[in-house]
Length: 286
Image 1 (cartoon, rainbow, N blue to C red):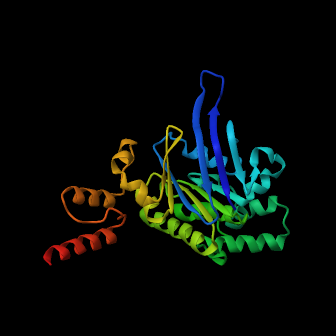
Image 2 (cartoon, rainbow, N blue to C red):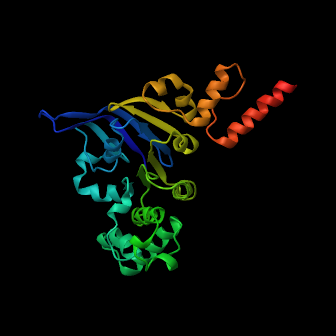
Image 3 (cartoon, helix red, strand yellow):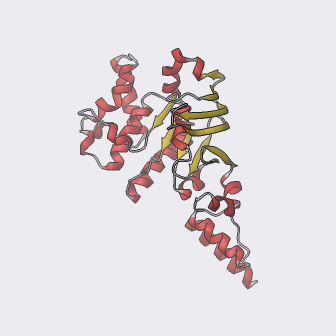
């Protein structure tokens, strides 16, 4: 599935004293299997943008094309588009409502009118996809689970619709370190093993730098940078001008380079920084 944005702009409450230009002339091509991260300061338009990708919001100007179809002209087909492009909002566990995990995950497939055996198959498969064994979790109340487990139940509810694109708005927000690691491990595995297109909205530069293939940087509703993590974070001054922090290990490499040390800048994790510094010290001894 390919998603293309052509000169997309969005205005909230147009023609009123409260008019807000949330997006301005966004152009973007998202290919099947992409792992895209969208970053930017609070209020930069990230959440507004991702809600255009499955038709929850429609552009004030411009077009969003899903497999070549203009979603604004496909009002009868929006349900199918939303099935194929799944969106997990921030703090999705707050939207859990059913008495059991099974019932919560089954809600979407039931609304699709699927037979009972297909619903059961989808629920079991979705729970396995997010790392929750069905035999252990199906009959439990979602409200008896940990925060990370509740969030994975919410993700299973999206996965039970069998989407081709998974959009996650701050999926690790509020989780403890273990819950965050588990959440991203499941997201990365779905991308790698299921071939899902993943679109990640995050404030954590470490999270996006270490996993996304491309980064889209928004500021005041405008697309200001786009490229690989290496391309974006190489321009440290511009990133910091927009109020964003470099990944900590990348910042360390920039500081060492400024001090005259021969180290690579494309470093995002502690193990990679350790290896780069050891290689630098070894080179100095020769």
